[in-house]
Length: 126
Image 1 (tube, rainbow, N blue to C red):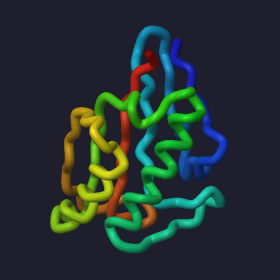
Image 2: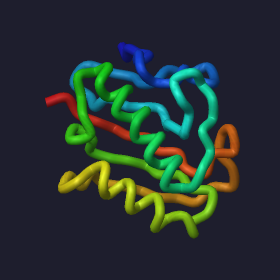
Image 3: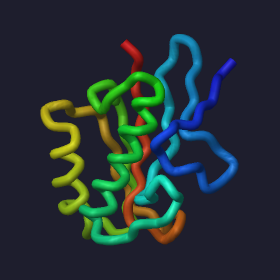
């Protein structure tokens, strides 16, 4: 039976979902994160600024399960404009350093709160 969780230090979910889900013997699945602060206020900004905020939230949710970015095995990046790819990718590469999880990047027509970047991750407990 899966267990869902909420993470301290991450913005509250803006809908009927949890920050993530865990099921024995399976990876940890995190809900997509956008550039919200811990009070739930949308931060906006450039693709780089939003990506930086997104990673702050991802690290907080991972930490709730005793995980770090080094435990991430797969990411999905959603962009509202593929023209923002280079800006997002520079921050993404800096955040992961030498770690290179599998990744899919797609352009979508719209994201919650009119964000321009959303990232979801799957991580494995070691």
